[in-house]
Length: 67
Image (tube, rainbow, N blue to C red; front, side):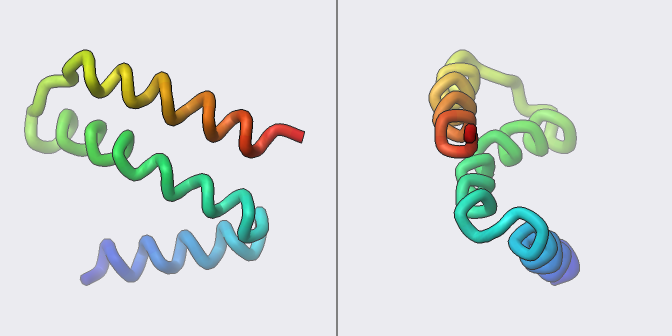
């Protein structure tokens, strides 16, 4: 329950500072965060499909947020 409340608080803060359009792109980082936490906490290995996903997600976020 505490991580969920912290996530909502962080989302509200980012929306106030960055605006709704930019914060919406942050949601696409969820799979990358999940892979990083799985690696750091659970000892999961980083596989090539993780890198492929990151190579698709990160440029898309960059394209969506550039001015």
